[in-house]
Each structure stands twice: as structure tokens, then as C-alpha cells.
Figure (cartoon, one colour):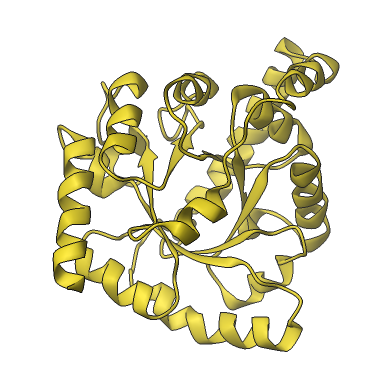
Amino acid sequence: MKHDILEEIVAHKKIELQHQKKAVPLHIMLGLASENMDRPTYSMRESLEKSDSSIIAEFKRKSPSKGWLHPKAVVSDIIPAYQANGASACSILTDEHFFGGSLGDLKKARQLTTLPLLRKDFVLESYQLFQAKAMGADAVLLIAAILNPEDCEMLANTAHTLGLEVLLEIHREEELKCLNPYVDMLGINNRNLGSFDTQVNHSLDLLPAVQAYLQKEKVYTPLLITESGIRDPKDVIRLRQEGFRGFLIGETFMKTENPGETLRSFIQTCTSHAD
């Protein structure tokens, strides 16, 4: 039987959350989140819509499938470089055990950039949304594979109450049932979170089902994003032509010595090929 990495991550996340709530009880975290309610926020959806490149540049030090990508990566080096070199938004991995990230990375990034920041983690309950707000996120990731539709809608609604945009991630057609009115962006993950196998064409394969669902329901108008496995600028051009308006890219940048410079070169190649 093939090892299911997602199950392992979720099981660990539940234990991690118990420890976090003991260290910082809910009422304290609520207070920290409320202190950030009046700070300026940056719309990730709007930034992607207006951008020519629409790249969400990700900060992550490692992954369960590839191991360490950039173990000594420092937020203060990479996030300003992402902004200077054309990113439309940044995704910050805050899972420590599997991805080498932390909430401190998110907090530090907020101090260094005016780009919209996505907290990327395995969100299971509202406590994590309060953490995201307290640390300076503008948007949060909700993963349909680990949530039922009712919990997904509750979490998305809570996120909006906190002034956070919502990126809902799906991998299979059945997960479209988690779509709800509070979802701002719909991401198709090209990576199977159970096996961590990645096929960049998965977004194109699933797109007709997504379009049919949105046409049928009519009330949902999320911005379409493709995630994972994007290594070639030609993939961005092809996916943009099919209607995608956001491209979440991490490994391609983070496995290099200078992720910001790699981003700059990537965008330049996208632009030249598009012309």
C-alpha cells in the first residue's frame, strides 16, 4: 500500500495544534488577531488580476517529497527580492515539521513587503485563521482534501470576517463541492497530496470540469490559480491562455541559490515567449 503523506501531515498537525493552543490559548490569540484588524491589507486576488505575470512566489525551505531545497533560506533575503523582481504575491509555508517554515517567517515577511501574503499551511480549525491574521497574512489556503464542505464554508466565512481572502485548493473534481460564496480564488493543485506526485497538465485536465461546475452554479466567480510543478515559463503562457490568472511557484525558485534572480529570469522568459 502506497504511503499517504497527507494523512501523516494532518495527524501531525492535530497534535501540533494542541501544543500551540496550550502555549497561546484561544482568548490570547483572538486578542492578537484583533490588534491587526486595522492594519492595511493587500488583496491577493486584485494583485493577480492586475499583473501581467501573476506569479505567487513561494518561500519554503523543504518539502516532504524533495527534502531540503534551501535549508538556510532567510525571509529577509528572499521576500524583498521576490517583490523587487516582479512577484504579484508571496506564499509563506508556515508548517515547520514537513516544510521547514514557521509563523515567525510570516510575521517577518509582513514587516518587509507590501505584497499580498498567503499563509500556506494545513488549516483544520479557526484558531489557525486567528494565527494568520495575527502574523500579518492577507489570505489563507484551505485544502478541500482535508475538509468537508460544511467546515470549509465555516472557515472561509470566518476568514472573511477577519479580512482574509480565501484560496480553496482542489485536486479532484469531487472536491468542487467545497466551493462556497466566501472563496475568492480556486486553485488546482497539480500535486497529489497523498503521493506528492506532480503533473503540470493536471490543471488543464481538470479545467473543463471546473468550468462546467462554475457555469452550472453561476453564483461562484473565483479567480483560477494553478499550483505546483510549474518549471517552464512556457507552461505559464499555456495555462494563462486557458484562463488561469495565478501561478503558485515554489520549488523552481527555492532550489536555486538566488530565488529572486531566478524569478526575474523566469518572468523575462515568460514575457519574451508571450511576445
